[in-house]
Image 1 (cartoon, rainbow, N blue to C red):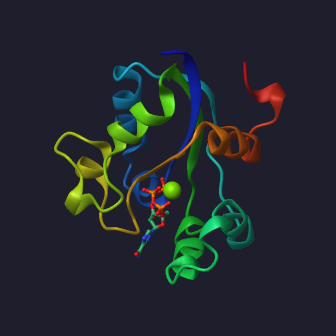
Image 2: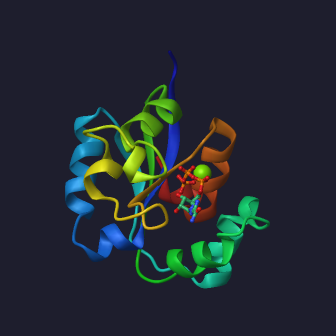
Length: 139
Ligand code: RTP
Ligand code: MG
C-alpha cells in the first residue's frame, strides 16, 4: 500500500476541552506523521466553504455555526493507506455508533460536536489540505 496523505481538523469542542494534545498523541501512536499543523479560527463563511458539499443538508447551518464557534487544529498527515486508516482511527460520525478505542468514541460529545474531521478520499484530502496550508507550509 502506497504512502499517502490525509487531512484532519480537531474540532472546536475537543480543542476547547483541552484534548488536542491527547488526540495528536493518538494520531502519532497510530503511525501518522504530521506534515503540517496550526491552530486557527474559521469565520462562518469559511466553515461554509469548507463544508459546502453539505450545503443542502438540514444540519448545514448548525455545522457552519459550530465549526466557527472556537479554534480548530487543522493538520496534514502522512501514512500508508492514510485516508482509510484515519477514518478507522476516528470512528463513526455518531460517537454512539463509534467503535471502542476510536478518537470519536473517547472524545466526541455528540453527532455534531464529534471532536475530529477526516477526509473521505485522496482527492478531498488534497483539496482540504490546500484550503488551510500553502505549499510553503508543507514538506
Ligand atoms: P467529517 O466530514 O467532519 O469528518 O464527518 P463525517 O465524514 O464522518 O460526516 P459527514 O457526513 O461528512 O458530516 C460532516 C459533519 O457534519 C456534522 N453532522 N451533523 N446533525 C446531524 O445530523 C449531522 N450529521 C453530520 C458532523 O459534525 C459531521 O462530522
Ligand atoms: Mg465528511
